[in-house]
Length: 425
Image 1 (cartoon, rainbow, N blue to C red):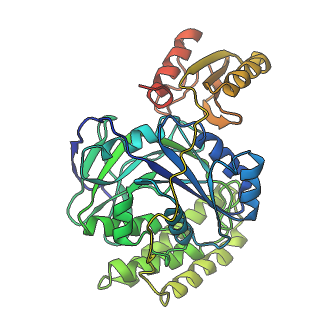
Image 2: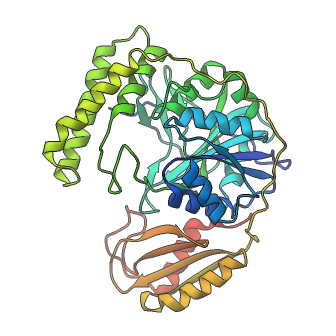
Image 3: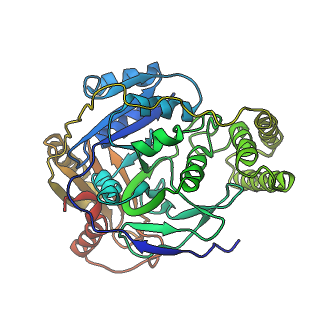
């Protein structure tokens, strides 16, 4: 399908007087990923933010092991319903703005500075940033809009400045649940997330309700998180699909709620074909076996049947703050150190990186080999952004496959590429 056209206008430049922000993280069954996410959140460059973690007993133990139990707000919740968990997080928070990130994601240090910028002196209701994928360099999601049946379509947005998006007729701007922020008064007005969406389409439903109420959306390209797609009851570590129940249930709930008079059978036929194609790709990639197809598709049908009778509009009745704002004291000292060297010097450089990270310095470590290997970038405890690959290889995937370049020039090029995401302006 050809992406719909759209128009954009830039927001006003960011001003002072930043609002207080509550960062809500939902985690269930992924303690290791939660610890990594919280490590990144603990090193944000922002003056007034708090962290609210809605999690199961395993996650609570991970928070304690990280030494953060007295620094974050913990909300116990052990049910497979991300919308209900987020509503609990909103109710337990006290910031003027509520930001959301998944437990298998890590934010760049300037994430909140950029994501919250458009709220200053404007009528923006919600902001959304960009999401990098598993290799840490390619984008997983950038700018997208939603059609009436909940399908997302990419759109082109020029430049890296925050922009208020005017979608084409019949479409709504989409923000990603792992990288978005909403004014508290808007969340209270709309009742937060609809708990009929246990997983999938949860933020999309909120996007449609915000748009219907007249809320403006700003996309913020420099507000970046890295999303790893951790394993869950729906997928394995290698992203092999194991269960499509929630995809089917939420899709059916979405159609009943937002497109009640539409051609649901056609939409469901397209959904089935889309998921069939997805599973076929995974068979070809040897992620799943052909014998698994029938069982996985049965979960999709069971979800569709459940979604046909599930009650909708299960918004929270009370989202007023229940406590006081618990400002988190960031571990970041505002400095950014760039370290680089050949891969065979990794132990020496890693020790230097660890020492700097312990002081609160944001560390970008570049380890190159004399090859044309593709680059990968990721966040590692205790607070190191590590990029590895061949000196002559690709980082950004549309670069030439092989190119000759001096070592220091390559380091400078890569450091400049991430500079506005790692450094205080």
